[in-house]
Structure formats: structure tokens, C-alpha cells
Image (cartoon, rainbow, N blue to C red; front, side, top):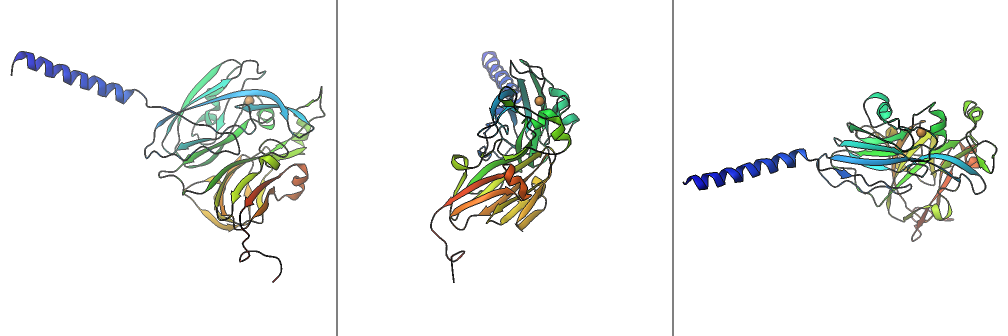
Length: 330
Ligand SMILES: [Cu+2]
């Protein structure tokens, strides 16, 4: 072999090594696709854990709590509840929290899927117009709440700063026909000032919610906002309850949950044939069921006086009647 050929071989080897090094160190980071309730991000197809970037912005805005009541919300992503993220166990998450310019408050994020100080809050308190980043490993599969924990916490949670993150197990969850994201929350609205209500701390301390709603407002799951399915389909609901005070007695009138992933943990006990499931303050659950007959099914907090405060939504099921399962008369 000539010296020339040896040199060439050395060059190829060097190039190969450099490329390999860069490929190994350059992060193949995917950016998480976030969805607004009641939509759920698509199931994760990859079979390996990855580095995933999540971008979220704290945003304060005025919106409708009911048809007639405007409220000064604090939020993640400009919606209440905040967007849903879908990750995989073992993923390394590079979490970017920005705080919109023009906001009045510092904000941060406590993600219940995190092991470590403040669930990330210790690393993310960020002033308006700034961004903070922290990285965590998703070690446990389940459905988790995230919320702001800045300041006294209570006003940040009561004003709307929360959402859900799903950490899928290896191999994912069984496939279903429909998936929805529903979140229950209490509000403690003051009398409006200049037409806009805000957080009344005395109502919070007294644990007297003025409103109890699904997906951020009265009617958040009614009319055009109702969930939909067809007879014979399987439905999975990712359900979170922020409280901030009360436990939810989550029930769907006319349905039985075929499966309940207890307290939102995946890989542990699964409840079967459950009518009503308790969801603690800042807790979550995953329920699955098959819809057997057409009609409107009401989602409620079966602490039933809360329906009068807004805790009702609809799942509208279309399709052929199913007299073998239910019919009028004999
Ligand atoms: Cu906040």
C-alpha cells in the first residue's frame, strides 16, 4: 500500500469518527406537540426514549368564565386549562418556560411528573419578558398535573395556571377510538370591577367556590364544545382536577367506566366497572369505556350541587339504536 493510500484511509477514518462524535453529542431533540383541551396529542410511536423540548408561555388575559362574567385569567399558553403534553417514560425533557411581555406577575411551573425540588418550580421562576429552562427525566408513567407555584401559589392556581401532562409507558397505552382531555376547576370570582371579575381570596379561604367548571368556563363541554363519539367506539378521557380545594366525584351519567387507571398512575392497579371515581385536588385519572347507545351523556362532578355552579358537560353519541342494551318498554 502506498503512503498516499494510507493517508486517504486515515482521512476517511477521521471523518467517520468526527461524524460519529457529532451525531452522538448533537441532541436529536423533538419538539413536543401541545394540544388545547379537549384535544389530546397523538400517541407516541417511537420505541426509544428521546430528548424532547417543551415550550410553554405564561400568559395573562381577560376572557369569559361564563356567558356573562368576564374574568382576569392567568394561564399557560393563553388557555385554561393550559395545553396537554404527551411524553414517554425515560424521556429527557428540556422545558422552556417563558413569561409573556406585558404580564404583571412572575410565574413558574411545578410539574407533578418531576422528581426534584418544587417539581421544577425551583428552577423556573421567571419575570415578564424572560425565559427559564430546566431539564428533567420522566421517570414514572402516568397522567400528571402541572401548575404554577409562584408567589403565594393560591392566586396563580385559582386564576387558571394548570394543565395535564401524560407520560406514556414503554409500548404506549392500548389503542382506543377517541381520546379527550378534560379538566375540572373551581373559581372564586369577586364582584366585577370595570366589568372584569378576579380572584376573591376570602372565598378561597372559606372554600366557597363561585364556579366549578370543566375546561375553563361554564359550558366548556356543552353545545359546540361537547365531546363526540359514535355507537360502538371506545373512549378514553384524561381527566384532571386542580381543585384548588375540592375533591371531584367524576361520573358520566349513563356510563360505567370499563377501566380506571387509579389516580392516573399507569402500571399499577386498574379499577374495573367503576361508576364514579374520586379525583383529589391536583390529581388526575384516566377512564375508558365503550359507548353502547346513542344520546347525550352528561359528565358531572357527582357532588351534585356543583352542577348548578357549572360542573356539567356532554358527550354526544351518534349512531343506531341498540335495543338489546337499552329500550323503552318490554
Ligand atoms: Cu403563575
